[in-house]
Structures are given as structure tokens and as C-alpha cells.
Length: 233
Length: 233
Image (cartoon, rainbow over all chains, first blue to last red; front, side, top):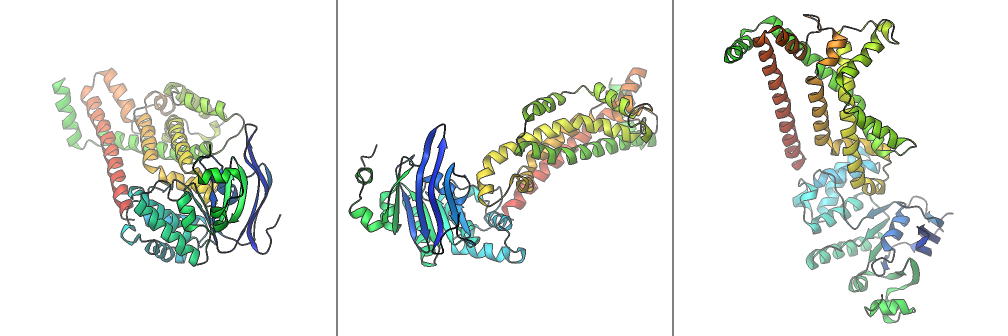
């Protein structure tokens, strides 16, 4: 299946079944250019799994996933992992993996680190950076590969409010630059601040796919209402 | 005893060509054996760590068993292979340093392989999602994982070196302990002790101990240098 011309990514009736239980159950949606789409839902809803399916880290058991041709996409996991190297060397390694031209790798990596406020940590071992700096480095590393779509799995889950604000600011900057963001969160206030569109996921099922303003003013499902009220089991 | 020790020290400082020829031959055989074993065992260990195939479990049990392979049996095996009526007899390698290299390599190989496999498998568990997210296949990941695990792998090679350097039975069988040709420190120590020539045996023992000390110091230095360089990469 090919994604439509206007769609960067299309999922059609995607399911993932483990031990006879559907972890992702018949999810369909399409991703258009230039927006922040938030995968919202409680813990265990299947947000991370769905992001991994979107990126291609996990293949669905049924349904189809189709990226539009030549749509570079990058994935930033919830717990960023770095090689035992400097921040710069980590970005360089990623650029080499994605086949970035060798001659311009260093310039691109430095640009990414400066852009994301990591100028002072270029030569620091990546693993010794603080949680906030590591998350910025993970996003910088992803940005360096020049993605059209950035898949972010709860990028601020373990950050303090200051670091969360910085990372959110960078996500908003990326959106302004035209990068399409598909991001998961269970943080309702974060979704209110950043999202233009909400995909509400519960128990592996996509219950709502709507504009963020509509979702927060009047969700159409009971589960979403309960989630917003903080009473969803 | 103390007289034997002072004679040994005198022998070390005398520059006796026979003494130093034995030391040189021992180092040559051991270093070449461990290098050959490491060249095969490191990539093979990585491949075993990253690939699943039928019979893998049984193969791992066999390889782990070979870690405790009795040296005398390794010597016998190489002897049977290289003896005039053996399958490799036409090479004419029996009672040459090359046969001793083969015997020591055979002993070092399973140790380096098993430790390398475990190191790479642990690293793959840690890095799999990250490397796959950037499009790396297990095969492409091997150089990255070998580099990430370089200090643990150096320790594995060192363990192989310890096994090879201290070996006496196998090299005695396939080398024949020929004076000036296949006589090594360990075979000389065994021979001279049985003859009651303790100064030579103790002198060679001291050199053997010093070599191991030197190798361990070099590994420690390299490891610290690596960390220092990494922090400034």
C-alpha cells in the first residue's frame, strides 16, 4: 500500500497481537504535513508500541503501514540511549548510520548541537549529561538526520519542569520549521500546550482522532472524558 | 632456594643468548597464537551473539565446554592433525613453532569467543532498539558493538593470552621442546625443574610473570587512555 499524495504516513487497520491479546487493535489514521499530532492516552494504552510500528521497529500482525516515498523519519525513544562516546561522536555515528555524506557530517552534527543549546557539551561524554541535556541531545541527533517527520515517544516523561519547558520550546520550533511531529504523551496539560491534533488511544484502540481544540472542549467518547477528568481506569 | 633466586636474577642480567632466545620464541608463539585466535573469535563471537539459528544453544554449550578443554588434549588433537598420517600432515608443521601457535590458538580461541559473545550479546540487548531505529541491521551493528565493547573484549583477549602463555602440555607435544627452536619458557621450566636446574627455571618464571604484569599494565593504560580520548573526542 502506498500513502496518498497528501499523506506522509497512513496506517490502515493495524493490529499487534501478543499472547492472543491485541495490544494494538485495528488502528487507522493518516499523517499530513506540518502539524503536531499527539498520541494521547493513559499508561499501557499502546502509545509507544504504535510509535514503534509507525517507525518500522515493529511490524504489525495485520493491517498496513505506508510511508509516502522519500519521507525521512526519525524516532526518539522514551529513554534515550547513547554510545559510550562524546555528544558529538554520538551524532556523527548516527549520521554515518543513515548514510549522511561523510564530508559534511561534522558540520551538520555541530550545527545540530549548537541549535539545541548543547554547544558547551559537544565534547562531553553523552552518558554523563543530565536527563534534560540527554533528551535535547536525542532530539538534536534526530534533527541532524533532516527528518520530515519526527516521532517522539514521551520525550519529557522523566524531566523536571524547566527541562520540560525547554524541550517543549524546541518541539514548537521544529514545528515552525515545518517538521511534522507525531508525539506520545499521557500529560494532558502538555497535549493542550503543543497539540494541533489528538489521537486518543485506550487499550490499544484509537477512540478519537480530532482537532485538539475540539477534543479538549468536548471529547466524544466516555473513555476520553474519563481520561480528561482523571478517572479513567 | 635463595641461592637459586639470586642465580636467576644474575641470569636475567647476564644477557645469556640461550635464555633470551627462549623468551623471544615464547613471546612470538603466544602473541601470534592469541592474535590468530582473536581475529577469528571476535567476529565469530559477535555473529553468534546477534544471530539465532537452530542448534545455537547446543553450539554455545559446546563452546563453553571447550573453555575448559584440557591442554594435553588440544596438543593431542593438533598432533593427530599434523602428524605424517594426519589430514594436514603434508604441511610438515609438526615440531615447528607454527604447530605450537596452532595449539595455543586452539586453547585461547574458546575463551575469547565465549567472552566476546557474552559481551556483544549484552551490548546488543542494550543497543538493539537504538541501532535498529537508525536502520542498522545486526550485521552492520557488529563494528559498532565491537568498538563499544572494546575494553571488555581486550580483557577477553587478555584471558586468552593468560591461557596460552601459561600452557605447557600442548606445546610440548606438538613442539617437541627442541633446544633453540621450539623450546619455550614453560617447557624449559618443566624440563629444567625436573633436571634440578632451578636458576634457569626461576629466571624464566620471573620473566613470564613480568610479561603478564606488563600486558596487564598496558591494558589498564590503554583503557584509561581510551576513556580520556573519548571524553575529548
